[in-house]
Length: 299
Image 1 (spheres, helix red, strand yellow):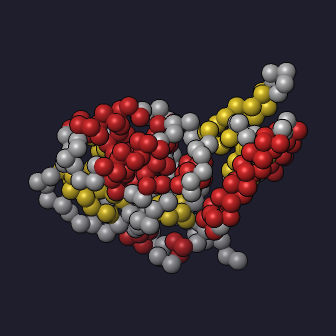
Image 2 (spheres, helix red, strand yellow):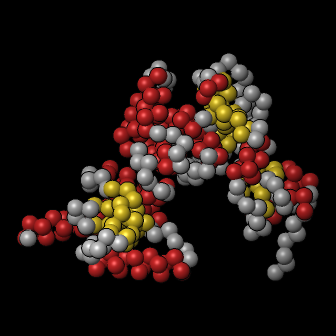
């Protein structure tokens, strides 16, 4: 198979479809393995690191005058990746009264914002972390809104108290009541979007809220494991397996063997479990908790 030609001008920074065409790379060629889709009409070379600087450079290609980045795209610039049906669009905001300029590849909102709601990074204006979470809570489905809130809280960019205070000061903004539900569910200890999604799946199914990042120690006090999600009283652990490297898998296996020796029931779940069989996943956890309760009653 012929190796695709990669112009040097397209190797080192993001570019638009029209720029690619100017360098002899067609739209169909961009579908090949040499390229990575950033969002609609914007691409980069597959080997270009996915850094914040490169994400900012990609946004600058489509951001209009007076506009700022908001919503899921602002979260993306803060290092958070979420799944949304419009994730290939750049979410762009304009202050109230400014002309909203439609542009291919952008999802445009007109927002009531103050200068204190905006920040600037490498020439790109975007909503502050707390305003980003506030808007995502109002616009996104509940689970994905909590994914954003958990991730920015875990990164130390917001606190529950800051979000609550901001929300209380902006009660006249549309859909603000949805922020209250996010505040009930936010968990700063959560370390990944999938941990948040699995936790919310269990809670919304009526199960008790698991403890995030629970530490387990052996009888002599030595550290054994830090669990993604745990029910310590029942000795039930729910571990999300996103590992693709065999060495990491072996380390996880050894850790789980030691946990089971301490009496823990360890349930390992995957993205396939969550997205394709969520009811079965919930049923597994419910059975484990029921079994644990039955064991305690017999004792």
